[in-house]
Length: 271
Image (cartoon, rainbow, N blue to C red; front, side, top):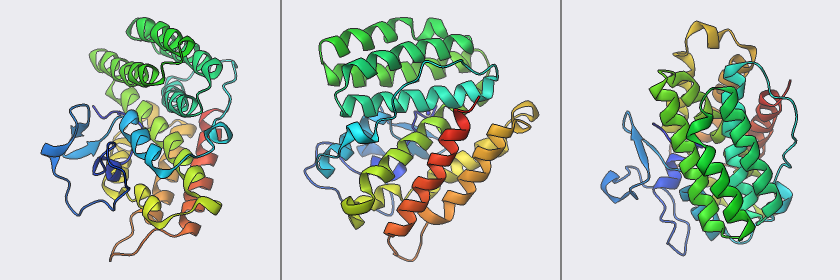
């Protein structure tokens, strides 16, 4: 998340959303083959959320309505770092709501995106996007909603960069990645566990990138308890998804990643 959200998964960038099958990520990603919307920051491939969900579409028909976390119109935190993390999680939730084809929830999320963006002084960047999200949800134009959510994320991060606040932009990315990863574990876990699908979690380079960005945060953010918890949680996840020697990610590891990301999402959304 100029790393675009989600957050998201370096392994996914190696998979074509147009392919009929999920394949294991290659040892080296051919950057020239990536779709134009993928972002490459410090040689790290960061696909936008729509690419990730394009791949997940090929895993079958997950019960997205059960994965969706209903949006609550609660009081917004006064802490900028926490707001940025929340904004990332909300945008990621928007993509899940699209998968669930829940128009009412998509519209609520569009409103939340605008409110959170206003709280960190980048509302102007998402006014048009928020309206387009609502309009497309009314028409049940799900590809259109996806496109606007991708655009909202990009516009927010660009606005933050223009305000010379790259740290908040990185936190938006981390928040989105955490929620996207949690959703992925919910889709892949339990009776739906599939070894090939679990390889979508194999993203050591990306998680190292997030770790570095969190470590390099200015003191005013690093002293924030929520940011500190997130930084520790990312380190907990690293050995679970950074397997080597050709080993595969186990069902147990998928569950553990889901537990950690779920815990962190609760912390991010605490008041």
